[in-house]
Length: 224
Ligand SMILES: Cc1cc2nc3c(=O)[nH]c(=O)nc-3n(C[C@H](O)[C@H](O)[C@H](O)COP(=O)(O)OP(=O)(O)OC[C@H]3O[C@@H](n4cnc5c(N)ncnc54)[C@H](O)[C@@H]3O)c2cc1C
Image (cartoon, rainbow, N blue to C red; front, side, top):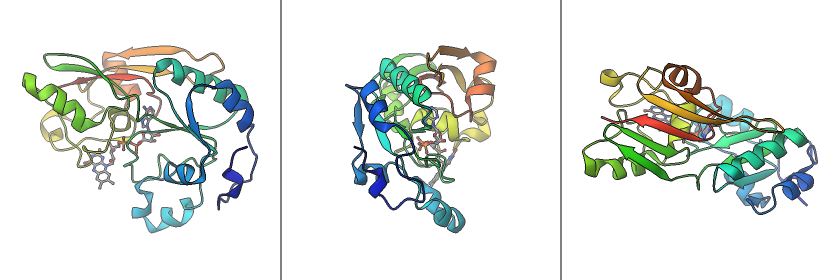
């Protein structure tokens, strides 16, 4: 039985069929522990006194931590089937409450989707939860690094930078995230009863994946 009802939230208890959801995703890491729910329902929104007050009692009903794309598809399908909202969580360094589950439901943490899949000169393909600093550590030996460095690069994930970021040191030269050439491709899992996997490339990718908050899969990033 989910423990969210015992959380000090301003959200009605038992809104969603969480037990049925958990049965559908059996085998995927999931927690309804109150401390986990609280910790995984926050980002840096508290920088704003207005958001600090508005968001302080928002909490997920369950946190899931998929290990691969197959797990992500199963979570998305179960959320769509049971009509449970899904909030994706990368490094949770966003400062406007972008990671806060405003209507509760499922928080999908990308912490274990952190593999660097391949690298070629000037390009890298990584899973969405890979930390920016880990990407740099993997590519530096071959003489490349990310083209922009947000000040949160040690804790932010690439999926969070693509979906919720703007740029960083390096953007004066190479532009912001949205500019063509910075995001080369993105693999998207749609939130439907039968999720589709869509791979966006080139111009469409930069325009549609950046800040779309829909990039659940992998990213190809340009390196300099
Ligand atoms: C002190 C401080 C300094 C900062 N400096 C910068 C800066 O220099 N440049 C800058 O651009 N930003 C900056 N930020 C904002 C933020 O740190 C960055 O945008 C960061 O890249 C977000 O990455 P994250 O992994 O923490 O994303 P999160 O906070 O986890 O997520 C951000 C948004 O993206 C969504 N999301 C995350 N992963 C996925 C995914 N795989 N699929 C779909 N949606 C996803 C989340 O749901 C959320 O809406 C700063 C924040 C702080 C607190």
